[in-house]
Amino acid sequence: MAPSAVTPVTSDALPVVKPVATTHAPTWLADLDADGYAVVKGAIPRERAIKYQTEAHAWLTSFGTELDLAAPRTWVKENLPVQSKINTFHGYGVAHEKFMWDARMEPGVLQAFEAIWGTDKLLASFDSLNITLPNRRDIARKGAWEHVDQSPLKRGRHCVQGILNLSPSGPEDGGLVVYPGSHRLSEAFFDTQTDRAAWNPLDRFLFDEAQLAWFKARGSPPVKVCADVGDLIVWDSRTIHYGAEPTELSQQIRTVIYAAYTPAQLASAEQLALKRDVFAKFGGTTHWPHDNIVPRSTETLLEDGTRDPRDRDEPRQLPLMSDQLLKLAGVKAY
Picture (cartoon, rainbow, N blue to C red):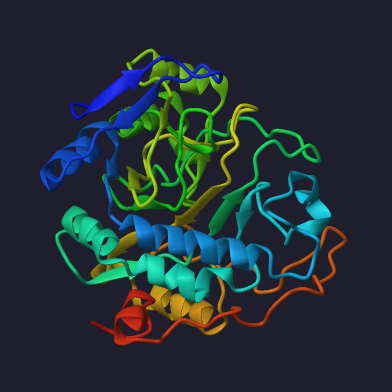
C-alpha cells in the first residue's frame, strides 16, 4: 500500500502495516480496490471514540458479577456475559445498545461507506461488539481461522465490512489480519482449486493451509492491520481475513464494533422483512446488511442449553429511534 510503512515482524511472525494519516479519500479508496482493505484515519473523533469505549466497558461490567476491568484476576468466564469465539458479544440485545447505534451513525463512518458505494441510502448490519481481555489464563488460544464472508456464487464486490476502532490496535494487540490482494484472486481460486458443484450459497468459506499456500505463492501473505482510536478499518468480504488474538506482550483491552453498510436498493423485499423482524426483537444478524439475513437467537443460552438468567429482552439503554436510524435499520424506506 502506497501510504503505509512496513515495520519488522511481530512475535506472531506477521508483517505489520501501520497506515499514515491522510485526508484524501481517493487514497484509501484506491487501497481498498487494490489490496482489499484500507484504514480510514479519524473516522470517529477521538474523544467520541473514547466515550463509546467507556460505554462499552460499562455494558460489559453491568451484569452483576465481580468483573473489574482494572483487575485481571477477575477476567474469567464466570464473570463475563456469554461470548462467541471467546471475545465477541452478540446476545443481550447488544447490537442495538444506544452506544452501538451512536457509533454506527458517526458522520465520518457513514461518509466512508457512502464513498465506497456512491450513495447515501445505506443499510447497516446488526453486528457484534468485541471486547478482548488480554492474557486470560482461563481459556486456550484459538489460533488463526482464515476465511472470507462471501460465497463464490457471488461474483464481484457485494459487501464491505468494517471495524470501528475504539482502542489502539498495535502489533501485539488483538486485531484484524488480512491477506492483501486475495480478493482479486478469489474467482481464480474458486474456479481452479475447488469443485464448483460444492459451492455453498452461505456467505462463508474457511481455508486450509494448502489453500492459503496457493494465495501466498501469488503474492498474498498475511498482514496484521494496525490502527488508532477512532479509525475505521474496511475490507472487501472476498479478502481472506481473521481476528488475531493478542500476544502475551499485549496489555491492551481491545474494544471494537463490527459495522458494515451496503446500498438499500440491493435488498430484496424478503430480506427487508427479515431485517425488520430481527430489529423488532433487538436481535443480531451477520456482517451483511442487505442479504444473508440469518437471525441470531434472541435468547442468550448457557453451555447447558438453558437461558442465561442475566439475559435481557431489550438493550440496557435503548437508542433514539430517529428517522436516520430506522432507515439504516431497514424499517423505514428512503
